[in-house]
Amino acid sequence: MKHLIVGNGIAGINAAKAIREMDTTAAIVMVSDETFPPYSRPMISYVLEGSEPHEKLPLFAGNVYEDLNITPVLGNRVAQLDAKKKIVRLENGADIEFETLLIASGADARHIRVPGSELGNIFTMRTQKDVLDQLKAVSQGVENALVLGGGLVGFKAAHALLKRGIKVTMLITSPYPLAMQVDETAGKMILRELEDHGLTVKVGVSVTAFDGDATVENARLDSGETLDCDLVIVGKGVDPSLRFIEQNDIQTGYGILVDKYLCSSIPNIYAAGDAAETFDIARQTRWINAIWPEAAIQGRIAGFNMSGRKVSCPGSLGRNVMRIYGLDVMTMGLANPENTDNFEIIQAGGEKTGAYRRLVFHGDILAGAVLINQIEQGGMLRAMIENRVPVRIPRSCLMSLDFNYSQLL
Amino acid sequence: MKQVIVNPEKCVGCMQCMLACAVAHAKSESLFAAVQETPKPRPRVHVGAGLFNQGFPNRCRHCDPAPCQLACLTGAIFRDAATHTVFINPDRCINCASCAMACPYGVLRFHEDTAAPPGKTVAVKCDNCDARVARGKIPACVEVCKTGALIYDEMGHALDQKTRQVARTMSSDAAAQGLPDTVALYNTLKQATVKAGTAIRR
Image (cartoon, rainbow over all chains, first blue to last red; front, side, top):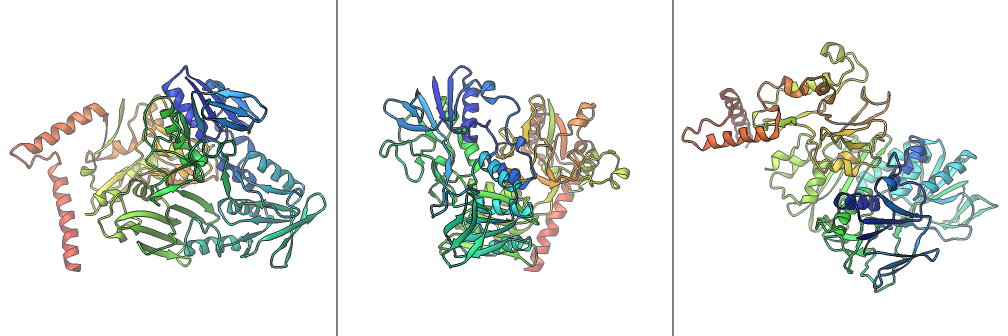
């Protein structure tokens, strides 16, 4: 059996591990454009912040390719997939044949396209190289940083730069950061915490151009304002890396559509991680949940299926946890539904109490939650959302710090 | 291989396991010295209250596969092949709380610990008292448990015992439910108190 895995992120690596558990002799080829050893992508913000060194990024002590007997093909992107002939063509022209294929190509950061956006010191934040480049700029002296976007990446970048004592201005379109993840009460608590530590937030404005010689010196905004900045981090989201797939070859939505075995519309071609569009348990619809733990488990499940052991994936669930100075923020599932008609939402606490809990119910099923501080029970709530456990006790019980699962039985 | 097995119906909620656990993970391993230590030793087992205030000793199940291990961003969480214990390497842990979000039992805590680099907050959970077991002792929570809510046994043997216990409840003398009389009485009293309290509030 010859397995080809596109991507050496956690989905790809876990798939290879699962294949090896099942089959010690199968050939595994792994293609990636990143030449750095498989590493913890979510950790790059810790490196930018300075709390963890760059050397700690790799996930494995030795050479994981050797240990798992994988043939690595690094420094190359896939240019084209021929699903019928079962061949993948690389950008350097080389062809690789496969019997089963895993598309774990992940996602790429969106760039900003305005005049001057090619200037130096304007970065996205996706790879370890991005952070090395940012750190190089920081070491040459950065006074004013500009972060575009208040999503997870923008927020992590801002948090990290603030911790380095750099003045940070964040431009966001929604009225508070992390609007995709949390509700307004929690968002305002987060905003307040960041502002207390020196963050400047500008709402409802965007950049029209950057000026500078070789490196960026200022940003012009659509409000007419000009901001001095010597470092820019663009956190405008990511798109699945699927350019090598011809349209109509494989069924795609925003990502590759997969069944519960993570198999695409073509047998023997699987997808996992940020490139896969799975069934979202909380939303009860197709969705890409581009987060590390989903990539990790999906990779493992895909690997088992590729090696012939049928394992089904119950679906995916968006979730995030972050520590923002004095706040521990955990958010999961459908925490902030746009249309609240069919939902019952209970919440308690807030800025004054220093802790906050919000639960979103759809019928008697928990669909989402936001916890700020006192997050120890988060995993239990997450499991309840994921397993769609009906809640037939008073819902207020789940708001209590004494809540335990046996109360549901 | 022996392991810690929980019989929650026997827990009276005395929390002695928590104290013993904290002491077992203190530098001094002695209660009197432990209270003076910095960082303050903390328990890995957590006794919570059920609907009728019955106790429940909540400890790491060392799941396989372990959701926390799969969710760990840094590879700090690993399984020891010999003992099947899931450990957290405090030097690799970055205190991101992804494990807490993954754990369906809510057993993760985050604090400074004698085993961690000084001043660093890390994820902490049950380690099956590996240090004690290596010295031929049994896990501290089991050693101190007076009611048999926590036992240290071969899983097969414990299951046999449980089967026998369940079988006994089927016999005509239904009183033989396997609980010591005192524990059964205590649990009944607790339930009655809570139910009475609810009735009064209504």
